[in-house]
Length: 168
Picture: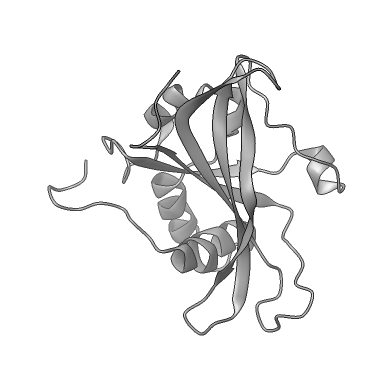
């Protein structure tokens, strides 16, 4: 239970540089890893309907009505250079817009972000819903902005409901 007035609301830099990096490269104590896992659980979000995911959120997001955080293991085909499957049993996650680079406060490229929207049904006739997800991937080398490579172990998803979209 989170105390009144407190909300887990990390910046993009904190999500990538601290949480995702510690999940990919465990450094420190088991206690730190256990704390991170309690706050942000590991879950294959594509095995669930988006409206069922809030119940699996970490302890800092339990009861939050706006956003939930998950570590998602990379799929084998994606790790080998293929496209990820973002299908669920009743719909699919569709990428919107283009990838954006996430920068640190010192203006270094630290990762990439992709926004996706959930559609009920099958492409191309699916119906857009109000469920959205931001997917983050960390770069392997943060010391240089030249040709950074993306980690392949985990990605990081933030699930949220848009206040402005309407379910059709």
